[in-house]
Structures are given as C-alpha cells and as structure tokens.
Length: 294
Image 1 (cartoon, helix red, strand yellow):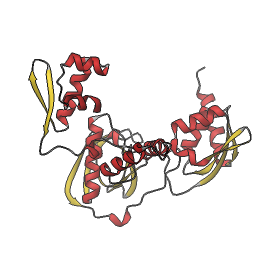
Image 2 (cartoon, one colour):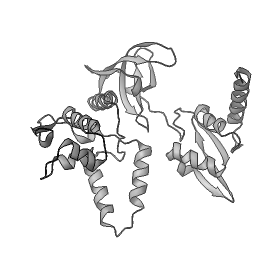
Image 3 (cartoon, one colour):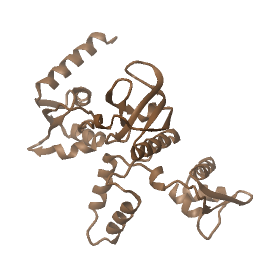
Image 4 (cartoon, helix red, strand yellow):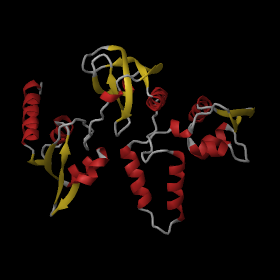
C-alpha cells in the first residue's frame, strides 16, 4: 500500500493496469487499496479514464499512527532488526528517528487488517486517554457463549494488542476482552468511576495473564526452540543454550499457554521444573486420549 501511495503521489501518472504490473498485484487489489486510502481520509482524484492520483489530504485525515498498530512482540522484532544494522549504516539512525516521530510509545502498534478492529482499537485508545466509559456492542463471550453489550472502563491493552484490559462494571472485576469479538466500541460521555480498582496483571511469554506466577524450566529440541520463538517472540529472553540442548527458564502466569505449547510438541519438550505444569499436561493428554474417536 505504501508503494502504491508513492506511485500515486509522484510526478508521473499511471493507469490502473500499469500500477498492477509495476506492483505485481491484480487490478482488483489496486482498486481495493484506493478505496482504503479514501476511507482513511486521503484525497484520491480520478484524472481521466482509469488514471488516479493522490492529492491533498482532507482536514479530518486520521493520523497514520492511529491506523497502524504494532504489538510489543512485533516491536521487539523490528527493534532487533534495526539494531542488527551496522552502526555506520546511515539508515539505522534514520529508521529509529522516523519511528520515534510517528509513535508516542516504545511499542509500535501492529497493523490491524480488519477495519472493525482498527476502529475498535482507536476508540478504546481514545477512551483510555479521556478516561471514559464505553459500551462493547455485541461482545461474543467464549465463556458464557452469549453475545451481548458490556459496559466497561477500558484502561490498557495486552502485549499483543489483541485484548483490551477493562473494568467490567457489571461483574466488578478487571477482565481481558478480545478486540476481535467486539462488534463496535461506543464511547460514552461518562467518566470513569472505578479508576482506583483498575489493575493490569502481568503477562507471560505465552500471552497468559495473572497475578500468580510459577517458575518452569523446559528442555527444548532445536525444532521446539525454533517454533517457540516464532510463535512467542517475547520468550527469547528466557531461552539459552546448554550443551546441545535449548533451555526455557521463566515465570508463567497460568498453565494454559505453556501447557498447550508442551502438549503440541510432547516428544520434543521435557519439563525439567514445574510439577503443576507436568500434572496439567499429563491430565490434558489423558483426557484427550479418553475422548478421542481414533
């Protein structure tokens, strides 16, 4: 999309089929991206035929930093890639300056492909800044199986920007609500009333949150180590080499995340420390075998 934006705003004009050839995309994709530019507030002018040009921006154009989100995990990868550049490389300092200029936090938020997710993240961010209550319209709960509105006070995001930390005014508890399960976020003209009860819980490398922590130690095969870091990049700080093995050693906040990872690679991961995790995995596998139709 950025390459298309550059071509549409350059001194040379291109037809839709020429743009498709240059960018190795379908003409349908080019038109879809042009519609995205318009929805974001950019002015796209049709000069003649099938030739378009990106012109001046509307006054109410959305800030690009509100359209693009990076999670902490993605930010860690981006920062590692930038840090990997040689210090003499002029691009290194330039990239960091540009990122710092666009984003007001060290976490560059991840691009949310669905427009509804983008709008919901933006609305939640605005509500957090203004300390306003919101209604999560049509929230789909996996626990109750119900789809209904929820009145909450949002006050933070999880490290992957998939969940929002909110104080549920109905239950009187802090909860994580998945942004993808929200049909819409409506900001109310009502300020927070329970700010003193807002509490962010720590999140572990497996994206599980909780106040209680337990120490675990896992011996990983090369394959298990690679899959761990690919799926959970923040686990890198807890992994080290020991002889021919890889060791994960860290604190987990719940059994589900680490348990799912271990059971998925049961023959390539050994639990060295963490009796609770061992019992969880053993019971999980036994239950799976008992209910299997194989």
